[in-house]
Every structure is written in C-alpha cells, then in structure tokens.
Length: 190
Image (cartoon, rainbow, N blue to C red; front, side):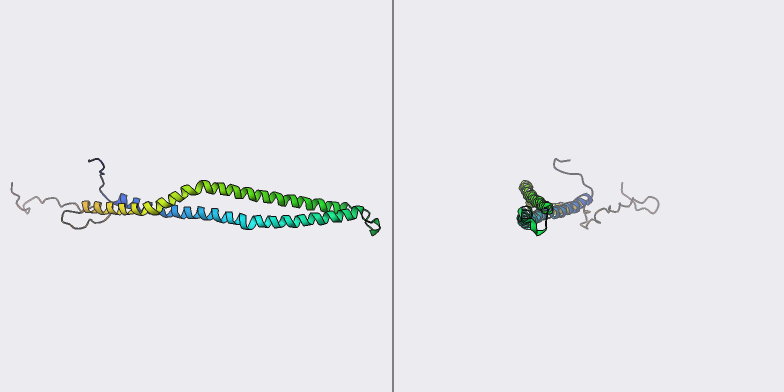
C-alpha cells in the first residue's frame, strides 16, 4: 500500500463519519450559543435587576433605620406623660431595621462579587469559544466538502468496470457466476 493511501472496500465508514461529524458540528454550535447566551443573560440579570433591586432595598432600609431611631429617641427621651413608660419596643424595631440594612448591604456586596466572578469567567472562556466557533464556521463546511469529494472518488473507484454505478453503500456487488461444467458447458479453448 502506498503511503497516504487507505484500504477501504466500502464508503460506509466515511459516510457514517460524515454524518457524525455534521451532528457534532451542529451540537457544538448549539452549545457555544447556549454558553454565550447564558453568560450574557446572567450578567444582564445581575447588573440590571439584582443590583438595582438591592440598592433600592438598601435606601428603604436606611430610611427605616432613621425613622426607627427617631421613634426610639422620642420614646426614650421624650415626654413620659404620653403614657409610654418604656422604649424597649422602639429599640427592638430600630435593631431589626439595622439588621435588614446590613443584610441589604451584604446582598449588594454578594451581587457585585458575582458580577466580577462572572466577568472573569467570561473573559477566560470566551476567547477559546470564539476560536472554536470560527473554526466550526470556516473549517467544518470545508471538511464536509472534502469528505464528499472522498466519497465521490471512492464511489468511482469501487464502480464496476462497465461504468454502472455501484449498488450503494453497504451493498456488495453480486459475485460473478462460476463457469459451467459438464456436457452443456460451452467449449473453452485450451
């Protein structure tokens, strides 16, 4: 066998490989689109929904802390003649408001950390994914064309000498009939 040649008796192997390669290419493109879309949508959700939500919530909590502090000061130092002997309830309300404010501040920090982490992941994985996408867009059609060309050449090679097309992938040509023997057999010159 010559270097660079192959011993192929049927185009079935190349045909199956061609179908599998096209399926792989389609699935890879779909996966690339999914990853890119997911990174984009999660980033937008964090930036456009979550961060503004928690910042608005923090402003409300800050207002609540200020109001509950005023209520506590008024109850604690205010006129006892108002019938309120203790400021314990107001102090508890102020402490709850402070905790809610701290939770909102923590949520903002968490969202900002997630935005940063997502940006880092995207900056790390997107360049290789873009290269793969470019390869799939440019080389996959070329590879399928080369496989088609190989299949055509193989079909020509496997075609019987009379020029009739081969019976198709996976179908072996009919064997030649054995020579007849006996009294009815045509005479063969020696």
